[in-house]
Length: 157
Image (cartoon, rainbow, N blue to C red; front, side):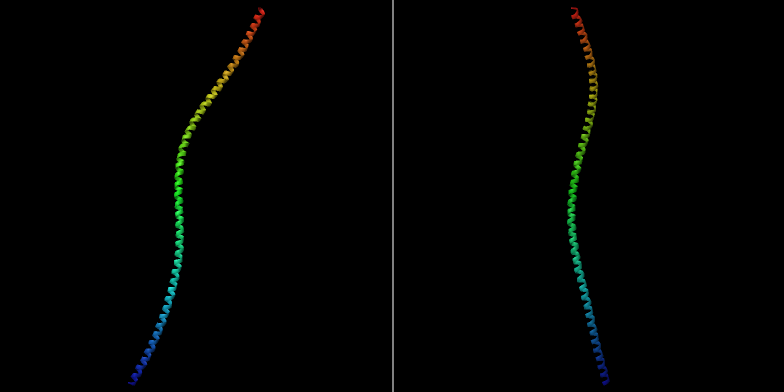
């Protein structure tokens, strides 16, 4: 019985030692696991902070791009209005051009007719000048004859 008691006491000591070692190992494992979790939490918090800063940067870029887009849309609208006005002016000017071209063609035709009339009038004037010259010469000859006849008549009388 003594031996049994010794054996039980030995087993008890062995059990206590094993339990203590197990507790120490569990405590070390828990401490190690806690450190790993704290490190992981720290990494995740760092990632969250980094992503939050990145999100803020992207948000600022988005807002800036949104403002640029609004300005560009306004410019686009203004350019469309200007293009519409320009097209309207172009249409009006095209119609005016057609009208002026027809008017020019009519005036050009009138001018050609008038030029031709002027040429014909100049030819007629030249012919009249020539006739006047011939008539003046004939008149001068007739005056000379009249004068000669007067002189002859006055000499005879």
